Image (tube, rainbow, N blue to C red; front, side, top):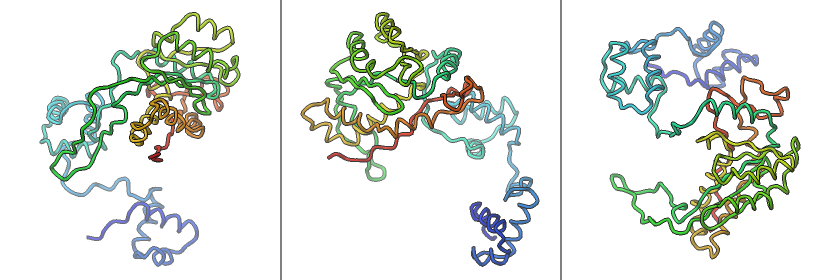
Length: 352
């Protein structure tokens, strides 16, 4: 049996044909038979695509029909953590058809469903509050937003999670199980990058947070609606300082609080991920530094203005227009529990 042509090759045939090449010229140029060229062009002229959409799939008839496959997709969406035998029982209950484990596995593959590590989301999340926040934050331009949050670093932060070893043998490396000294990183992130950062040993207190905002962040902010005029914080207790909120309000700065258990709506979390990835990459530099705060400052410098600028490009555009100036504002999708992300490149430079 002759091998079928790859889809990209079929599209080359169509593009060359549209550019005025004859069927024989296309066959000679792509080193394929002229009959195949005619067949691809005929299918495209008839159906508007390079594959006949009504052609039946060769091979044995599948146990599950198309409607059964839709039921399987619904079950997977409803119970993402089921085992295969549990899916089999559920499919039998809903369709009356019982199949083997291998058949169910192939059916999942046919639906484009694979097994992967679960991404856990807090069950305490309130989707209504998340929707209200998303609609509220959509009123602002991306250059008005300043994101703040805390992250910690200890002796285990630079530990790598993957390694190499021979087949059928574990990759074992001795690591520190004691956390050791803990350092807290407190940055402020804008469209142009990190504009201020504070690093301290131990946890961040309400007083330390207030002093940092007043002394380093506020001087770089402006009254609303100028750039850097909206401060976005999570619901940590140290952020709810009435004196600080009144101080910010007096300077014309607006404050928006994230809904509970919603760190995915704050792009600074992706910045933290990049910073910790840099620390793992350059662990020797981190472990041998005389001042443990210095590697953290170097890691923060990896968040370039280009990376921060990508925040505005990676924000999903919502079908709901929340402001007349939708092209200049951050828009969100109310129905997909959007995660704000930054398009960070992996820091590959090794300082050692």
